[in-house]
Image (tube, rainbow, N blue to C red; front, side):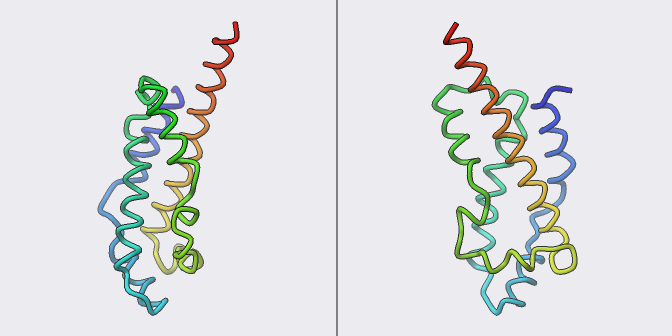
Length: 131
């Protein structure tokens, strides 16, 4: 199976079900915070990774500009995008937030694999251009 297809398979198995609203609310309560910022930030982050992951086998057909944007978006993890949410990191575990934990782990794995696919493509393209 090619890398793009592997990414799609992981995406299909890891992102099944609904958004982990209750986990977000539960850890927000533990932090004494409102989940009003966490939920839309996670939704944005998951949507970006989902968008690229669900079409990973066709990702390299996009324009160089779109691929460059994908690399830029995928170059940061959730807490790099939203450092103000760093305090949640310790509570995103199987005991406190099992569904959110699973999605965060899957997102990170997908993000890293997508970056690898894009960087390999870029390296291959640069080699072809140099020939």
